Amino acid sequence: MDFVQARKNMVASQVRTNDVTDLRLQAALENAPREQFLPVDLKHLAYVEREIEYAKDRRLLTPRDFAKLLAAADVRPGDLVLDVACGSGYSTAVLAQLAEMVVGLEPDEALAQTAQANLNALGLTNAAVIVGDPAAGAAKQGPFDLIFLGAPIEVEPVRLLEQLKEGGRLASIIRLGGVFRGAVYRRSGSAIAPVPSFDASARHVLPAFAAPKVFKF
Image (cartoon, rainbow, N blue to C red; front, top):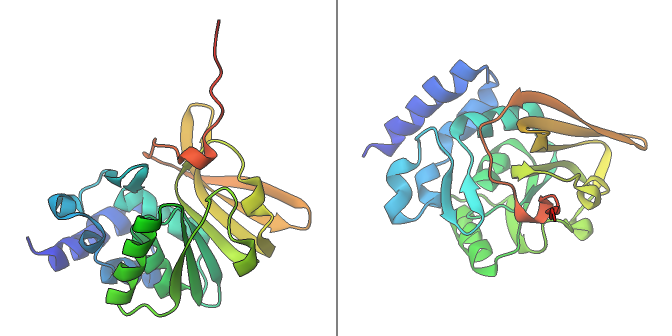
């Protein structure tokens, strides 16, 4: 399979056609080999428009959802970014091309080591992966200009929002009733509220941000 051509096709037919017009973002997506962040038996699915589960509770978002969430996040060259539940490091690799520094946060130590190895293989020296609880964030490394969650959430990420700089953003797919929408929280003084921007196809909620189950008797 020609992964280079598949990557170009992804940007042309799954990214640009979904109103993602930022040329820096398009270039970052074209330069990041999705297949290298997947196990051998899943590499052939790297550019298919579907979520790909590659480890327990870790999935690659569809190319469309991922690109639109990054576009909404408005990643800037001087940003310090926290990439929460970064998994094998794909989102970290894309963010590292757009920001000044990226901290990947992953609770699974083996997966964190894989992510760091993947980033090293691509020569991305402005990204580092640490092991930690997604819900707790990484306050010692912050505060952050941007916090990125590459999986849906159902509850407000309170401790993460506390780690934003003034004017900082938190981008995630959030569940609003029965609908999942890409959204960005922005810190302005004590006011922080999500602003939805697009309907997302992702449905698998990150366990650290799942709503408590209500038992009916």
